[in-house]
Image (cartoon, rainbow over all chains, first blue to last red):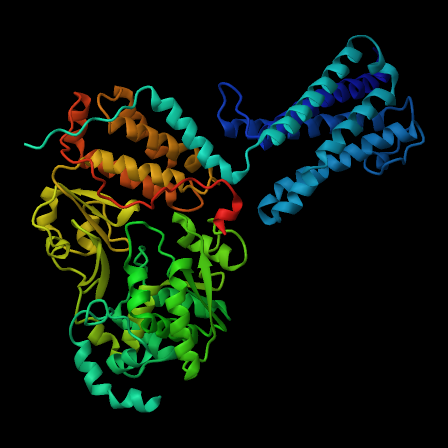
Length: 208
Length: 423
């Protein structure tokens, strides 16, 4: 590696790390939406994990973009980082990267001002995560050949498998969810069942 | 109409000197418009003058929270074009005072509703009731329409037969066309331009408009003036009576001896029998024992009944009445209920008492409404007051000689299974 290739490698490496981070963020986000509990962590920690990892991912994406722009091996204009399909080099696949970056920014900005937003507006923007991850994945695979063979291919397939499993699990868990009106009855029945082995009734004492 | 009103002014004043103030002097009477006007005469204070009179009278809400009425009226007026709702959907199985008031003196409530609407500049007024009580009120409304008594139109809205249906935010949701489920909003209902007052509060308001704040303060204490309606459970059928606030608690209760007393209903507090003789019927005295009058339910637990069994029965009902919206309530109350059932039986596990105490702490303050808080308060007071009984159950004994239930519950109640049951 020479100084002339350092930026190129930095861009590749941060891109790979960002993909891993976004995968974990995606899975944690689904966990939060279904109120999952990670063993050993309180529920709010899952939320914190999701938030902090997503901010970390932004940092990696920022380095990924800046180093790609600064690198002179191929010419990528600065604006193509946020304006999709503005790069002459790999116009479509780099464009997908810009799409993903824009969606990430939208999700983060709306989350920062969430307290001032209508809940449905926030949710609508946040649901684009389901779009942005596949877009980021395609960008990763097709922008260059690195992720198409060897260990990096296995890694990216692993990420895809995690996301696929998380989405499947979410769909199954939504389908299994009890309607709100039936939850209390179900909880009562469950609590009573759990206590049934130990609960007996005392017979009344005869009056003296 | 005015002829009737002016002719009886003196007689009405005289009648108003005694008790009861709200209920008809002859128990069991259901006052029609004529009887009502003959007894109470004409309205005197209106609008801003009424707001001042209510403030001077020191009237507080009779729905349970005892919040100063004039503060709410003023806030609703400031909200601009508010809606006024008379809340008569008393859903507590042990309380019958609102139903009794609506049946025996419906015109007093309707007077108060119209007066409040006029005073805050409301264009619309609602009366929120359980389905069973609407007939008598429709009859009273027809009487009033016939003589064009009211400038504000009153709409009757019906509540589903669920414990939380009368909760303020659930009421607003129901009247807005949704289910009667508690909702969360960072702004108070009154600030949103919806004035919700208990029907008894409005009936007192109608009397203050007639007889003034000084008359109102002739009964009650300095801080908590006036009278209040009580539902008494002291053997036999429950009775609704009217008592001046501040009378001795044992006199209000009317039974010489009880094993324990429940004050404030199923979100209320058990008091040990030993504490009762020194107590008076006011929040200032009850607060020292962590209790409050709530909506005026008093129940005496007779000797020979087990307080733990009673508490377990009621807690199971309260758990079934959770709206199922907030996790701590949905998950916590059924577990607390099951654990109490165990404590009410012979030889409960040692850990169970500890579990109940822990869960009661975990659910408190964590719901959109105060259902978990009220239930936890009720349960905790039972664990304190019936401490000796807990020990007896631990050794497989119980003081009860009588398994007849004391505290009333709706027959065959069950947790809802469809959203329609909340409408």
